[in-house]
Image (cartoon, rainbow, N blue to C red):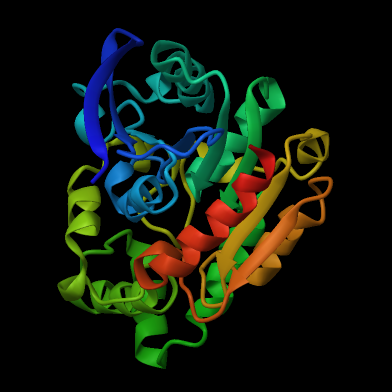
Length: 297
């Protein structure tokens, strides 16, 4: 079994939690894989299936909870504390503190968005980048969510429309509709059947989700409401692979918008997988990610 190391990195007056899985039998030349979780506001737990890369392929895998999330939780902050730059700067602080100067990068959902911002600022020492179901335009993401909602039963569509009008997504009908949407397009299961790593991730969600995203996955009222880096990503030079599922809330249309704009970006589409494909198709995800990044060791 891989050796697990937990540590904290000083950042922004607080502490960023980091967790490293080091293989017992490290394979020569395998560069570490650094994982960026989604949200903004979730935590690393939902990606822990990828820790198996350490045992399976002899590669070190590093996770961290972005500031304000999970084990990097902090006291209440004013909204202006949370910005994209806060987490971009943290990325470089974590790398410096842990000596991660020669790596591969994986970003899930918001983590992929964060990773793109980092690669646009300074891609030094990043040999490859897996972008897991991340939009380059929030308008596309939301329009596709609205389209997916039209495939729900009419009463569920009505409940979500009412929740959007009132802001009450906790109402029983709206919660049931959201649960069905998440089962189809996000987690691949109903809330009652969530694996422990997702329960832990949800319990670690920080207040920054409301600040950056908003009340739900279906509307964006937070600071990301104007997210659009379609023009900028043409400047990314790190070898990239997009990873997504056919049943993903990050729909093929959404991901194609990214693939078409990042020079040379490859794309692996996993049949039947939702947004968190690693929960439903863990072996396929591990093999695809290792297969891609190993070409750039």
